[in-house]
Image (cartoon, rainbow, N blue to C red):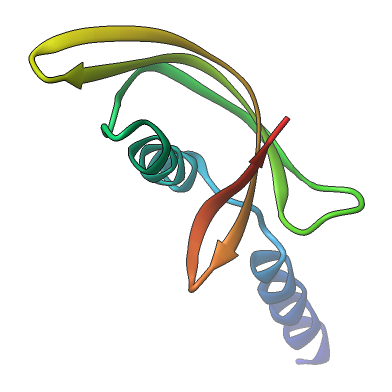
Amino acid sequence: MKTMTAATLALALAACSAGPGQGDVEHALGAFFEQHAGAKPTFENLEVGSCQKAEGSPGYACAVNGQARFDLGGRKQREKLTGTFLLDKVGGRWTVIATR
């Protein structure tokens, strides 16, 4: 019984320390671009690399590669999206707090 309890505790702790998943990153990026560019993008071929605990700052550094498509007043614009985004939980939601 102790072994099962220890294993359950280890899994619970691992889940608590896990970084953002693919969907979390997409939602955070959408909100980030909506706030900074004034339009919420749709993403094409978005690849999120592993999110690693950031050293020297809060959150997780997530490598992202793909394209963001914006509809700006009827004009469509496509931008290459390659970089590292730092995400942290703010108010219970994953949020982009910096770019690298």
